[in-house]
Length: 264
Image 1 (cartoon, rainbow, N blue to C red):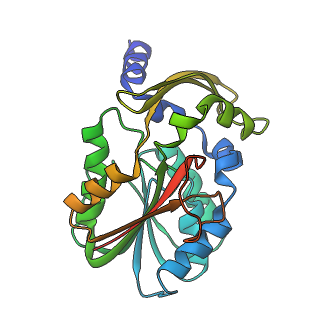
Image 2 (image 1 turned 180 degrees about the vertical axis):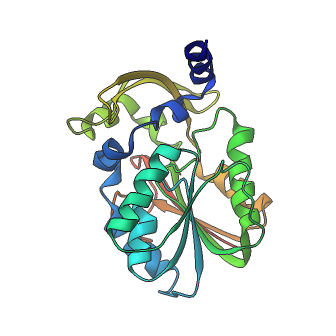
C-alpha cells in the first residue's frame, strides 16, 4: 500500500520536480552550469561590489552562484523547490567554508516582504518552467514582493526570438556534453511560445528518467510589460552568453537566452 501511495504521489509531481530529484551531482556537470565565475563577475559589477546588500538567489539549484558570491563576501539566501539540490548546495557551502542560508520554498509562494536588496534568478531558475503563464507570473510577483524599494532584479530566461529563426533541437544537441541530459522531439508551439520535448537523464543513483517537458519562451516586450506591471521602472534586456554576461551584448535572434536587468 505504501508503495502504491508513493507511486501515485510521484506521478502527481510536475516534470521539473521529477527531473531534479537525486540530481545534485549530475546538475553541476551540465553544460549550462559551467559559467558561474563570469556570471558572478557580472553580478558584482552590476551591484557596484556593495557587500552590504542582501541578495536572494531564486531557483538556486546546487547553490553555485550563492556559494561563489558568498565566498566574495556577499550576504546570500538561496531558495529552491528541490530538497535534493538544496542538500547538495549545503554540502558544497560547508566544503567551501561559507555560510549561505538555503531554504526550500516554491518561488510562487515566497514568505518575504521587502526583505532583499537584490534578486538573481540564473539559468531559468524556476522561471519559465511552470505549467501556465499565470504561474510564471506568480514567480515574478513573489520576487518583486521580496525586494525593497530601489532594488535590482537580475535574471535570465529563454529568448522567444530564437525559435522563430532557429531549431531548438539542433541548438540543444550542439551544446550537450557526454553524460548530460538530452532533449528529443522538440516541438515549438507558435501559439503558446512553449517548447515541448522529451528529456532523458540518468540521475545520481544511475536511474534513467524520460520526462515529458515544456518550457515557455518570452519575447523582450512581454518581459518588459510584465515587470513594469510589478513596479519596475527600468527594464533592460541583453543577450546572455554563458559565463560572459555583458551590457555590450545586444540581444539578437541567435541568442538562446536573454539577460534581464530590472530596477525599481
